[in-house]
Length: 123
Ligand SMILES: O=C(CO)COP(=O)(O)O
Image 1 (cartoon, helix red, strand yellow):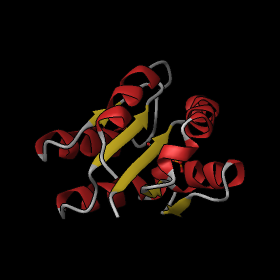
Image 2 (spheres, protein in one colour; image 1 turned 30 degrees about the vertical axis):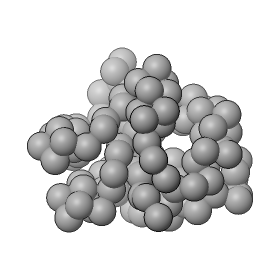
Image 3 (cartoon, rainbow, N blue to C red; image 1 turned 180 degrees about the vertical axis):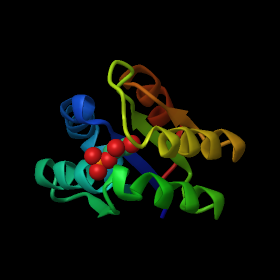
Image 4 (cartoon, rainbow, N blue to C red; image 1 turned 60 degrees about the horizontal axis):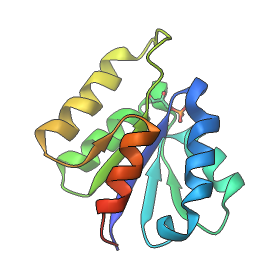
């Protein structure tokens, strides 16, 4: 089963939950790996989805997702970033985006690009 990463910064978690809920039928054909808090919110909203929450982003979850990408285990990353707030783990965020770019996997950082990535993904 194709695996994808879903992550959202705090100010974007409601948007992520809304996006996942809107696409729950399609997302049902993927394995989902998420940073801890994002994954918890997704599971609450859509308990039928196959979501594995990792550590919270600031506590290593971004790095765990980056490691999965480096190992070829994720086919896409949807990361709803908050471009208006500072983050103490900014280096981890940059590393995650960098490793996704390096490995040439589809990477979406907002809802518009996430819609396009999802439309192009095969289960
Ligand atoms: O901080 C994050 C991504 O950088 C998200 O982590 P959480 O989903 O644990 O809040």
